Image (cartoon, rainbow, N blue to C red):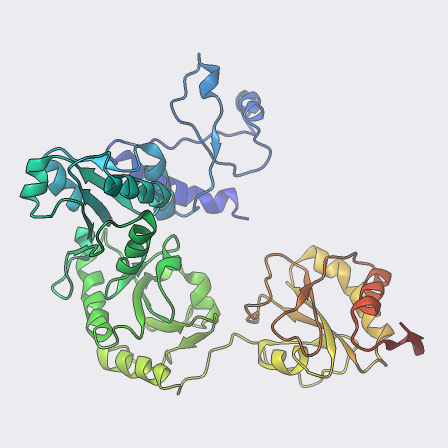
Length: 449
């Protein structure tokens, strides 16, 4: 969970940007610990921090406006801005003049514009339906003004994706038309998703799910506010490489500051190189370009081609395999995960822990005792892995610590999450029920199950 201190700078950055929005979207904050604010926070059901709520049309003298909506959006600056813009006004802004159109096309974000002759037409209704479901991801606008449709040189019922002005380049068109006639809302959403990345899209935490895999991401200091020219200098070079792999690879640039977690997982956070490069595939695997190789169009092209040719191994964040691993609880790292946990001859109970986790420390003596009780049972392995220092396979969902899974032998893709008690007896009862071998050696005694 993001702390108040972690949210504060992102919230402040978002507030600065939204103040300049048309119309402005105010962000406010309340110190619920202060005596004068406690009653207010209690009134609106604030019990933890930080809590974000959205008020629309609030009036002190009108109780019907006193029911805020819980904020369910992103918690980094750009995501907050996009989400709150979508909440602040209509899902699609109506354009009435050429000036309105030119202003819409010149915004700092992508915008999808519909050109219609009748707002009640089926085409317009489908457009507005799509806008309603995507308004937190894209800006939408529409017009039914005949002169404006004609002046735009777009046909009636056209739907056009205009790229944000800051991304304009000679290497790709500034706008893309949805070709399909009588498009349904699902068609419009698919069009938006496919068009967003372009030759090389700007990946952000709030839009990364829109980039199809495999995706080649080039990480560097992406800053369109203070250094747009330098940012596009590198993006254009990536785009030239991307043009050679159309249909085979999605390309993106990403700001290093937005992806410190990914860079740490790739072993690229502390490198001296200005550019970091990685490919992420459909299975959640990552492939890192050697950080000792100087970035250039030639080295990027060679890296991508080597990946497509199957010449690069997936990168694993892993501790070293222990030299000695004969204790009651086997130590698993990413490099030996397959060998121990996916052993076709053994069932495995594995704990994913974090060294700083208090609950994990409390569990440790009980988990060790469990391992000792099953030390003479060859068909069951009790194991643990530091999930902060090793990559966890994608079929093991770890959101908190400790997280425990049962990996039955012969069923590698389908581990079962352990939801039982944390006493030794609870674990033993579970293992007796789930074990493939129905005769277990527990504490040196054979038990028929």
